[in-house]
Image (cartoon, rainbow, N blue to C red; front, top):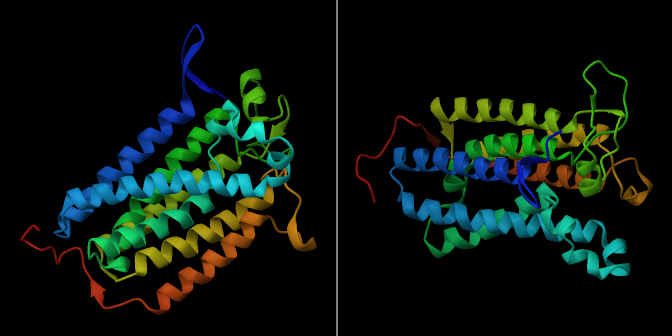
Length: 268
């Protein structure tokens, strides 16, 4: 759609990069707001968010390299190509490594894992919705061909050159499907936060509901990788099933009720 937000000669400001930066700032603002309401040290929470962001970026890239290993094995120079470095990677790979980094950081600072992770989920959902709008602007993560009334047609040659999106062909707006789904998910998580929840419940709901969303969207999304195991499921759908199971497990272990009204007056 509009991969370049602003252009001056050879310099340009990528729409995707701007929206991802905005997504991080919005998520950080929401998370620190919740942390303050819960009486947590906002500086520690901010540092945790930054560590998780770096972990998420690294995990997304590594998973992308893993999924396209045949390409990068035959053409290792593509690993450091500009188009590769600008690619978002695989979100679920980033989510998994971010959770690992969060677990390490929380243990180091004696933060309870589930109750702290709960605080991040609303911000994570809204950030993902904004990030998917960046994908839509860049043309990446595009869908399969369709003839539905809401199909989108990309026409920007620069987007085609950078991310390979086909031009002048109506496609499923899979980026928008996921963006809208994440907005709904944010609303659910925010409502649960405001009306009381059990420890670990927000994280569990996030993993379950996002996994269902991603599993469904994958049926309409274009895939360059061969489907594994001879079954009609993509690699990200298999990851979705694993995260779905983890989410249900966390929900079964959800602890005692924790209401947003029970805000500590004393700040640590």
